[in-house]
Length: 553
Image (cartoon, rainbow, N blue to C red):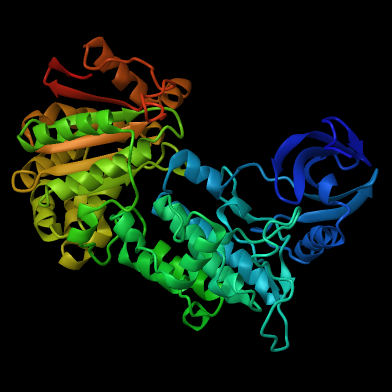
């Protein structure tokens, strides 16, 4: 029979609508009328219900996962059968999978993807402790709730680790059965080398797959790709991907090392357990407080001269941004905004702009700061602290630190990791007790202006629709200061979010519109000729005291 209609009853479960589908089954949101709770129901597809192997694997998912009780694993409630349909009743999780988050937002912030990695590794360790390997870890199989909790699902390929020294796994996917109807198997791009060869697997195969997920979340691209299944498998077996920081330069070297070890082709060189990988991620996470201090990243010539992936269809927006950058380098700084709806390509555009900026101007000081949804508007100056903290780990850190000690002592006290080694942090904190917001804003304007005299500065502030009010006030203040400085501040935001939430940035934008500082033409749904891509809005504001001038499209 075909998929059931919404509102249909299966035993005491009322189906409310399909939420997902895969090679073996369809997932529905449903109501458990006995217990009065919302659940998810996964039904075996009718087309494969007659296949004994497919049915066995489907039921094996429930049996495998039901043995696990962990906050980062989707809970299985029951295995049921009704009207000739086998189905699994499981915990309903509100949220999106990692694949969807990447498609919507682009590369994830480092803190967020590390948090997801830690939780996923913890979930895998719980499974491995009972000798159960997942065999299908991929970004589509990790859900993330609005609160940031990761949940691993889909144990359809899960299997007990063999205790005998078998050399070949008879149930493993091969090139001859990869396309069998109803067969569930690890997506090729996330498979470990031993998995592609049909060898018996252990916990280290899941570690390799998790490394692929984290690489994808950090760079928006898979570490191994190809035009065919065979080409992907060949890449997994023979090639080494670019280090994540070669694709996204602000990533720390520690993250590169974690990914390199997880993706080692020889499983003996990988982490020996998911717990060990989780600990490595926790050690990195402990340093990521917005003022990360670690090994400086060197932007080498090979990286800046060639993009890691082709970039097409944004010529107009890139030209506009590069024009604003050239003007800023010439001494006419400004604030630039890249706005548009989710998934429109703001992150891709800003990433490419920064890459080209570094390539064209080697002496440029470039950094980015992010507003984080889970912090709401409670973390004052978060994107600025993030961006300045990153600059304090780069090649010009000593010069910037000296400028800030002299011109921005209140900010030094907000970046304790960067200034703790100077021995004067306690003195700085005592001297800045009771500092007003006005003083902090003035000091940041002074410090940026002095630092930019010898090294032009580009700051990218991402997701300003989540910015705290203090950050918006500082942005407004700086836009009035940097008109004659070699500073470019770029910010991304979603217009509908600032409108819906009455965000402080809304009044800032209205102020610019009132003074004809920008053109607000919502063309986000239009397609650009030849590219087929929705257009990002790129516009700039240049304030001077109480006189406003237009720099827009």
